[in-house]
Image 1: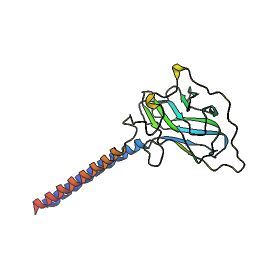
Image 2: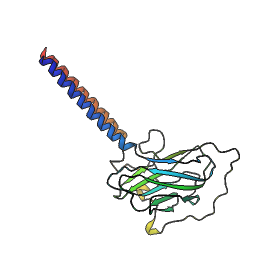
Image 3: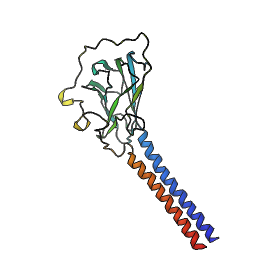
Image 4: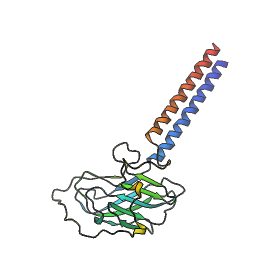
Amino acid sequence: MFRAKNRRTAARYASLTIAAAASAVFLSAGQALAHVEVESEKAQALAENVEISFDAEAESTTAGITQIRVVLPEGIAPSDVTYGEGPKGWKFTTNDDGYTVKGPAVKAGENAEYSVVVRQLPDAEELAFKTLQTYSDGRTDRWIELGDGSEEPAPVLKLKAAAADAKPASPSHSETVSETPSESASPTAEESSASPTTEAKKDDDSGLSTGAWVGIGAAVLVALAAVGYAVRRRSGAQQ
């Protein structure tokens, strides 16, 4: 009877250990899943005057989003992009390699939704819009990585094949709007290229790295092994 009670106690301990580990993994995964969504009703290669909508998901519950900096994909010039709609008070400016929309912080915990209009989409299968998302407390989420399984994926717009009669439009001759030097939207030295190979993760809140996931899995395995050892030891002591 005493032996059965010990086994039940060990089983309950094992269940609690596994549940705690699973909860940690689930909560961490929830943080890593937040990202920027992109969509368009005219997502087709060589389509003209295309409105593209973005939904930048909020990862912070204490600071609001104040700025979104986008590096445009190859084939879209900054001068060919105009502002659609966005949060109240936000302004749009173009840079050498993309654009920035920024303004008063949106309410903490709320997404920042905005749209732009592109003169013509390039003849491609998909377009990646690398995004730097800044909060009122100075934190920056870097949604810049490409490829399946990316931890900080850049928003990607899938395109349908171009229409049979579609042709590339003539190059735009409009001048690029730039900000004054004191308000430059150009990234700092550490953000200069928004490249997955040069951008380092600087916020613990912006999702777990591969090493962290491996560590969590190892912790679960160690806990299970310890429980199994304890059960066998107690069972042997009672025989």
